[in-house]
Image 1: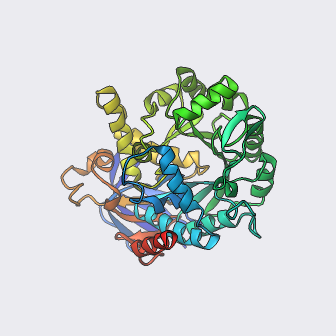
Image 2 (image 1 turned 180 degrees about the vertical axis):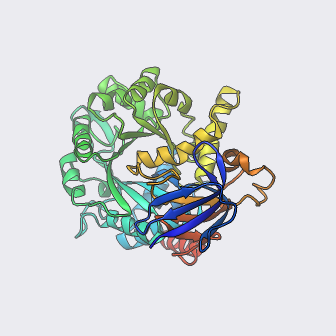
Image 3 (image 1 turned 120 degrees about the horizontal axis):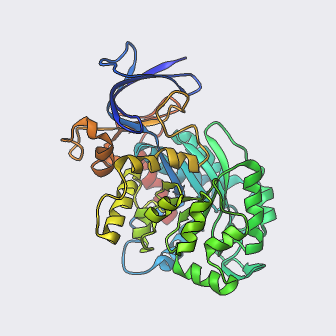
Length: 450
């Protein structure tokens, strides 16, 4: 059954168009787009405000949401934060992970996110014993996304060692990391080959980092993803310690190591890409390897500011993620990428608002294997989100400044509607499937800290 949405103002990739009617088929795709419709067609669902393509959260660790506020007290580094994170990870079960992730993904829907890339390495029970269903934790995440009403790309992650030793081996996982590891890349591939795509879910792959996957096993993961034409993501040069260890063991940077083992390419996305050499930037750009920046996490963990502008100029498409969920707000991630570059360069205006929105929408979806999402046009998936133009943050600018309003004024709090596959998941700021998202978050997180 076809449904019609009437958008008061719609961002169509290059400009804001007033009065746009969208027809959506029963399989959740936009079948027609009509401009210059001054009044809503009869029976249309009216979306007041500025409607954008659905936002893509390209990099997520759902269980990190349980760390918000708890890790902000006192000083420290990424490595001290990691110890707290391990403590939360050790208490998760398939049931508790489902409950937490359902609430986290509902929070994302409330923030206008219609697709998430879940960088998933929490595979087994504490101590490393597989569950009866070896993919119980991944299946919990897929089910959680379905119940929260958003799409997911499960980036099943190979995580085999705790430190680099040499070309052929890594240091054994520590007691926390044992539940992350399948032992070998071949065993990882056998387990995640059982996972299947669904209407709302796609299966991709990830290499946790060059620290966590020995060099001679990188190719196994890359081959698995290549044979399936699946997305492949990797944490890359997030910490200088990773670079130093890689240089000491291999005489190469992590980027060069990945290139030499066939990991880089147009379906691959490096996450963070913070501490890179000029050669690294060139390698990523010339191979069309993507870059996912996570500015709110990178600043929260004091990681540093990555060379996003140089990477994009070299040919690396940009996307955005909320990573540790210190904040879940892709508009803030887009804004922060520009503002970080201003701080670094002491000049303004490195990306247009339209370019930042593209990173938050079309390019983010492409990095997750959803090439048919992230735009408002016939044939695309009917995934879109509407922000209010009359809040205390957005009131004032005329609607034609829609991209600027969305990126430089609005926040997740301004999202009024989220539609996924033509289905109204968030209506007037209320989640239609999860009755009380704050309570769901509070209860699931409290249970982990009990």
